Amino acid sequence: MAGGQYDWTYILAPKNKRAKLSFFAGWMACAGWIALLAAAAALTQALLMGVIALWNDAYVMERWQAFLAMMLFLVISLVLNVFGVRILPALDAFGLYWSVIGMVVVMVALLVCAKGEYQPPKAVFGTFTNTSGWPDGFAFFLGMLQSWLTTSSTDTAAHLIEEMPNPAITAPRVMWLGPVTGVVTAWPFMVVLLFTLKDFDAVLTSPAGPLGEIYHQVTQSRLGATLLLLISVVAMTFCTQSVGTIVSRMVMSFARDRGFGSWSAPLAPVHPKLKSPVMAVIFSSAWVVLFGLICE
Amino acid sequence: MSRATNGSTDRLLGSTPSHDYGATERGDEMDATGHRLHHVVNGIDQGADLERNFSFFDSLGLAFSLLNTWTAMAAALPVGLALGGSATMLWGLVVSLIGQVLIAIVLWVYSDERG
Image (cartoon, rainbow over all chains, first blue to last red; front, side, top):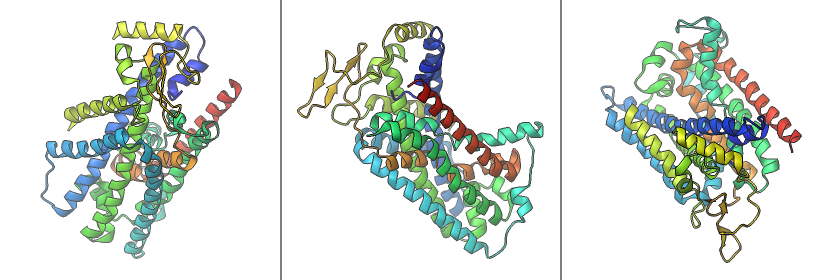
């Protein structure tokens, strides 16, 4: 029952519509997760390119370089999910430690290097800008898209329940604690980031990316900014691996219920030795290669 | 596409969901320790069972790594600053959190009701 959304739809929808609605939900969820895998790989690549841009002002990223960097993180995710299913639990627990400790390190470094030069509180907590051309209320919701995306882990636990020893207790706890831990850590981090940054306009346009630019503005050191940025690169590598894990369970589960028509049979099986839905992992990664070829 | 759609929905309608995977069926193959190597439901070979290795903390670690809210939010600063500014980024996080927890609660209540 690792299907999440489409299982819920099947259970909750009226009997005469539930197969169609569930099928639609399954396709939407699979497409969404595969796109998220592409987004995770692309964001990791963007952070890595930020490191390069910090050291070389004249550097202009070639598209094929961006594509290759994106593929690097995709391949790491693919290899771990195909061959490393047994080390994934320990790896993800380590990913949590890495991310939280790394974030604290960044916050402390930024606060120390800022030496008391902060943005006024009004600029951090009360500044509403709208350059989109939409009405203010609508712009608020558009701006919320990112925070919504980065807190959407409700179904993560649902796709993982076949791998939990005690899913009835564990899954609901992870469902609500995922976003809570995410926001409890990210909120103070964003506050520190917005207080310590020096030049808003440079953040918007810098080739080093917003994070690299802020780190560089505050620390005044390329090496310092690079080290801080590498924390995020590693954290996002864990992210790409996690998304790869979840998307493969999603595809596997939907294939078991024949959601992919005649493609279902090859996508469904879990490999007897590797204990991983190998074909589902490869299938979702193949889509990301395709997205990469189109976009980069 | 349309052919696949019809075929699949018909099968979804007519078949038992594949979730009752506790029962051993014809076509199943076991290894020496009694773990299934092949498990056939509704004519689809589901292969082996996944191993239950994710403890609570491991699962939370996966969810947290997957979100990495702080990096993802910071990387989206240019978008956020153009659409609503810092106020939207900070308070939008709080609004999103409330929404996500509400979703989790609704799912919990529903699954409690329906068993």
